[in-house]
Image 1 (cartoon, rainbow, N blue to C red):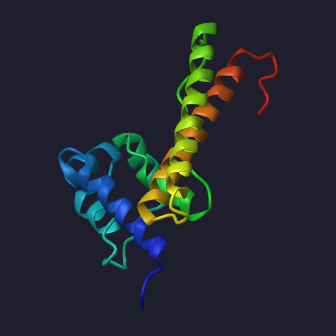
Image 2: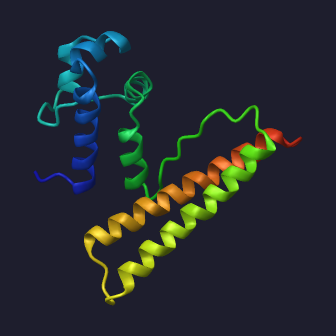
Length: 157
């Protein structure tokens, strides 16, 4: 049975997050309280008897600080993952800097679209660059929102 391309990407992400970690599955398994062989089997798409649970995937991404699994999941579901830092203490300068960063990101996105359309066709590489630039713009926009949220008196999301 042929797997859906998106699910193959997700399988690849799970495998890569575990095996790209320094020390590989053996080192990571200790951090997340699993047997290294079991962890390796759970991220091996060819092993049909073992599957990574959502809780395990979250624990692995926390331990590795690698968000490729959730990024692929979000893309499959038609969205994008935005990692947000702690913005509890925000200065006026930081807000202005984030606002300027937002406009720079939007400018970069606009430029990539303009360049892609110059020849009236968009290649796969151009589309990938546009998507990456758009994701960066969305991330900066959400960071700005969360910075504003932290200084608001609303505290309701």
